[in-house]
Amino acid sequence: MFFPTDSPHGLPHNPFNAIVLPCPIGWISSMDGAGNVNLAPYSFFNAVAYVPPQVMFAATGAHDHGGRFKDTVRNIEETREFVVNIATWDLREAVNASSVNAPHGEDEFDYAGLEKAPSELVAPPRVARSPVHLECVHSQTVPLLDAGNGGPNTAVFGKVIGIHIDDAVMTDGLVDIAKLRPIGRLGYRDYVHVTERFSMTRPVWEDG
Image 1 (spheres, rainbow, N blue to C red):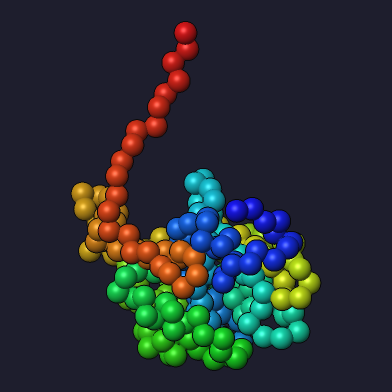
Image 2: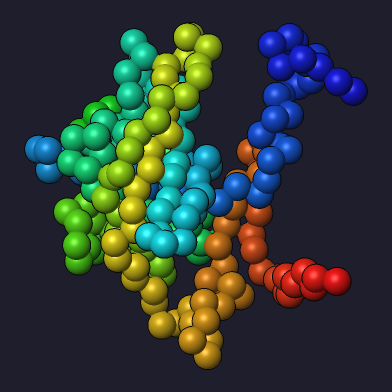
């Protein structure tokens, strides 16, 4: 089949989200200037550079009406700090619970039954049970195209200034995916549980 993206596709759900996958989940904790903490998962998330290490996430639409930014974006714009908590199989229910469209000022840590852990270099707390955390400072916010009827689409970039890794998910100095057991977002309401991996060596071009 083929359909222009500005025309009806005739399917039960938009297939776009089921095509570019699996999506890493950016489980992001932030804090506003008054000290209110927010925790929310974002499936438009990825690492984008090695040196310095940088990540990004995109907030699409809005939790509330009136086209206002989501709490995570507003908090980061205000305090310029956030933490990425790695979403794992054991935390899957809490990750989903933290996606609730709670009013501004409500603490999703409490709603999802999660304990906070202090960060080392930034103010927002970490999810204590997550085995890996990236402490980040805001570098830039990029407005994206939007349809004008669902709130702004916004990409937020941050520089990673500190990394926490639980020794329990390490093997011989490497992060062990089988121990980490990360989850990712697929299309529709589906997720993936990463338990297997394979390796390939990048080829080297030989002149002549």
